[in-house]
Amino acid sequence: MAASDSAGDDSLYPIAVLIDELKNEDVQLRLNSIKKLSTIALALGVERTRTELIPFLTETIYDEDEVLLALAEQLGQFITLVGGPEYAFYLLPPLESLATVEETVVRDKAVESLRIVAQQHSPTDLESHFVPLVQRLAAGDWFTTRTSACGLFSVCYPRISAAMKGELRSHFRALCQDDTPMVRRAAATKLGELAQVVELEYLKSDLIPMFVNLAQDEQDSVRLLAVEACVSIATLLPQEDTEQLVMPTLRQCTELQKAVGPEITKTDLVPAFQSLLKDTEAEVRAAAANKVKDFCQNLDKAHQENIIMTNILPCVKELVADPNQHELEFEKAPLFSRTPRRSGKSIRRGV
Image 1 (cartoon, rainbow, N blue to C red):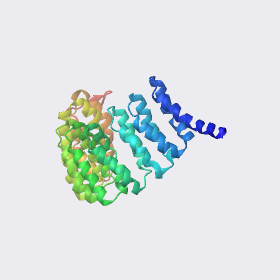
Image 2 (image 1 turned 180 degrees about the vertical axis):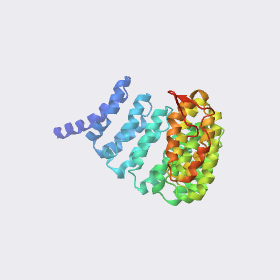
Image 3 (image 1 turned 180 degrees about the horizontal axis):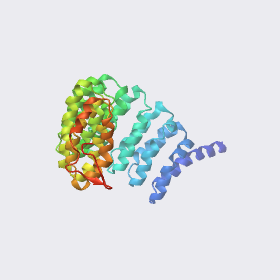
Image 4 (image 1 turned 30 degrees about the vertical axis):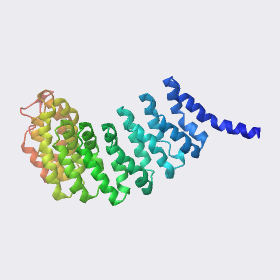
């Protein structure tokens, strides 16, 4: 009997140590304890991990950002430790709490782990546990929760019922129209990703109107992200719809250069424009090629030549050999407002 009691006491030891260290005033001790979670979970076994460890962690998510970041990362690797995919939903409560904290890096890591966990959910568990989590975050009082929600739609959308898909599209539409610019930015960032999994009819009826609104947003950063989302959306559209969607966006791309200034143009708009010039769809490349002149002329003069030579010209050279004839129209327009020279060699105008 004594031996049995001793074994029982030993089995309680890991959780007791964890509780003591997590309550310790020393941040490093708490951090070390979090990093040992997988070892402790193995010692406890899957059932006690689900019924004791996870609830304890959920109740104690008030700590230094460094500790919370480590916890968010650890929980993404806990699926086998709670008993496998059929019990993955046990990990949602602590991750949901972490997705609401103030520190951005912690929220981002929690969302990353939630995306991992969602992929292990069955369709039934997605509808019973994960989608309600997304809906709670999307309707949260704090903008932090709503920004976190934006990254979770695409991972559950393909495997849920039509009715729930409709609910998620409505929630995402609300996020695209949110009063807080940070939320609209987060929605614009994930719009292209959601477009990849939404049915074509709803891409046209629901997501394109969302895109149009974001592309006309009062915030430059939101409009910029909408331009980037355009690349993903345009590749999914039928040929006859591509021209209608892409051309207004490309016109806006050149307008954005003046609005956001040279630095953001250089770091964000130039890569976005390169993506359009290299797009897999001929119509997208053609539309982008027609805007090469305007885009290059609007570049900051101090960096114009370097950006054209480094970023734009290689794309243009590929388009010269493109079998699709639409792109060749760009050759009529010079890229430079003057004839630049480098290393004593003239650069051919119009290339």
